[in-house]
Image 1 (spheres, one colour):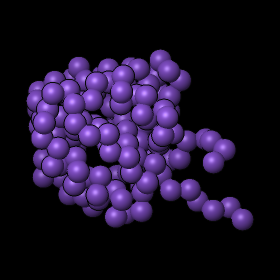
Image 2 (tube, helix red, strand yellow; image 1 turned 90 degrees about the horizontal axis):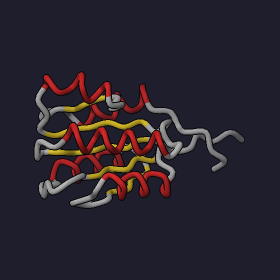
Image 3 (cartoon, helix red, strand yellow; image 1 turned 120 degrees about the vertical axis):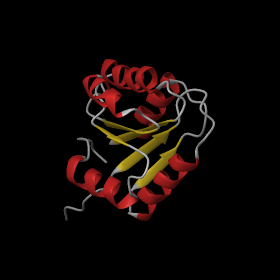
Length: 138
């Protein structure tokens, strides 16, 4: 029997940004939609996020940043995932991000950026259409 595996999602708050309400809401939305969700908590450095993503064998890494350091943190996570052979994990971002920074984030490997006001339904719909399970034995 070929049973479809649930997608695994890691939600992370890189840097010193201490506001995690939005990230927790997104994590809950993914959980309620049937995804397996890992939330890393506040004040994570890119190395911690990458290590958790690899250890948890996730399909999607969702990053939230409200502090203005999104270019550095998001880019560093994408770069380190690629360097560690996990470049097949989809990386998305959200938070207070100027629209003018979105092309730069995409060049750094961020597949999609969700801005304030995006509905959970829109995020889940995008994920369902664009994120596929990684090739693994589980």
